[in-house]
Length: 239
Image (cartoon, rainbow, N blue to C red):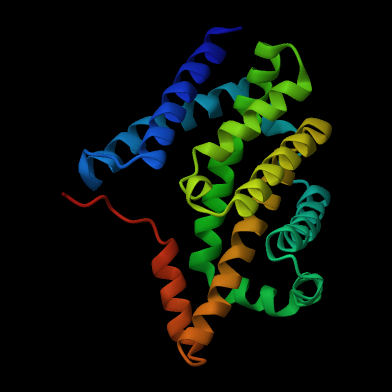
């Protein structure tokens, strides 16, 4: 392993330990301290991952390929439909969402704040996990399948919702993580997995928007404001 790989691996390990500790158990340092530590682990990790990915030539591999962008949008939508089938257990819900792409598209273009939020999240997380962590773990384990599985598990457990959702929802998220890892391994396309990741997050926000519309008696503007408040980055507060 190169020096860059060791640096990424060390920062990744620190980030995973901190995230799992903060997410799995109540953190005693207050919101300000929790936010500070999270910032202190993720930012260095992101820049180290960018450095590693750049030197591995990841950013030159058809990074803005229209083919992979289009394929990512299509696959992202289809994968999310399958996710709904797993989590909702309803073929009708999945079918309705599959063919309701027009409403989803309007929600996306009319709410650039939500779209921008999830593009930045998708870019940052896929650079860290697929462009850097996955190849490093594949080399470290000496086995592609094992490296992809370990990456998917670590990616899942650093998310707070993994420990708070139902077993079915958490299982679906782990399957999604594995699938994205496999697609990146097969294609080597960073933009593909970024788009898939972004589409997933936008579609989750869209479903939450529909729920808010019902809760607010059809007030779509108020529902949009609620969704934007949910997903806009929050400054850590002093405890």
